[in-house]
Image (cartoon, rainbow, N blue to C red):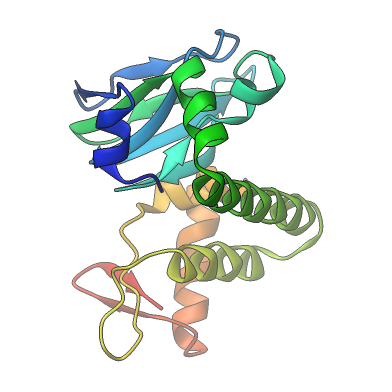
Length: 198
């Protein structure tokens, strides 16, 4: 999203997080802009029964948790390291100054937030009205479109676990497993070395 050199020159710091470590909690005040340098971070919520719902998964060069920086509300979700990770932190004021002084970065940033809002709107509709197979294809296609790890034949290897797919789509793990088998039979995806490819 933002060039690491620009983050460094603006006062950004690189911080290490261990797998499972929480970067911030739901309800906390937003103090930093976060951007993944290495690893994977998820934003999530838990319902009253303790079931996790993943709001999003963020990998190298992706930022997360920005809306509260602009509107002064508390974080609506937690952020947790899925793997050992390194994340850029830039204080709220320095981040806002960076955007003011760099219109091109500001525009790119606004476009990214707009795409995320579009994704959220689509997923709310999908989760409430569509069949499991359709939901899974939608989420896989979203990650395929927004991931740089496609090979030359445009095949995307899904790095998400079945549990993560369930948490992203509001389905049970058993339903995800059954749906993936059906989608494989229909030729919508294939499984190689226990990994889904689309």
